[in-house]
Image 1 (tube, rainbow, N blue to C red):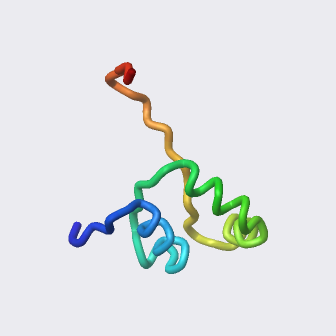
Image 2: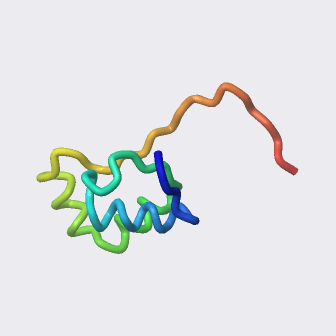
Length: 69
């Protein structure tokens, strides 16, 4: 996959700035997308209605459960 940024925040910012063409696949944290939508709701509405591709949150079904004290 090439060079990896030092944080998911940088990767997410690059994705938002450049769209899907800049980063075809981004794995980040749910709060990054939620915070972005809350900060710029008008842009999110435009993206929802006009963009051929938009960010989505996926919630995979876990195969292993563990407790972290």
